[in-house]
Image (cartoon, rainbow, N blue to C red; front, top):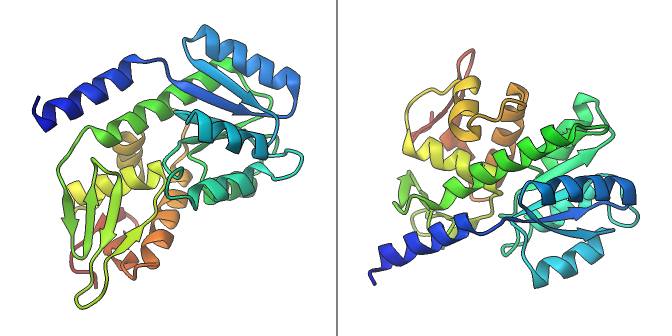
Length: 252
């Protein structure tokens, strides 16, 4: 079988298998509510009470998505998210944060830590399921295109989920990105030198997830730039005042 056919077969098999969701929540009633609704929606569900237990479970059965409570005994959801995003093996797991903190600053802090989305308690189970499905749809798109993309010194390989920066005369550097930042960069590199409004980015990168606010785009752009800055190439993502954002090969 040709490599391309093998890759497609693996993608198709993954799409047909039930998604595995890991719930990390120390409140039994909330964990049970989430687990029951996920199970009824066709998902395979695992549960952990705190971050340390969750990490052990992730090492055994890697989940397709993590539902993570912000306030937990021991390591908080924000701290655990940062730990996962710093791991080259686990950084690609989509994370949905549960929080009782509804202020905008708190939501931004959760997104800044590396979460891909958040749900504020109390929440509607239907909304939670919709967000889970939207995150999984978004993440499933990451591996569908195998074309290696280049923008200046930045190279993105969708098949391996790797971003490499090659500066002349320097050793190649790998850039660690979460799934949302990876997809965002992939979209920018597929459509370079064009200005994209926040609403356009929401439509193309987040898809039909109606619950995401435009402010969320700014948070993920900030995270993308922070990751690229470690390889001295964040200037390739430009802000166009009053319009949106643009990826360019030759920054000003």
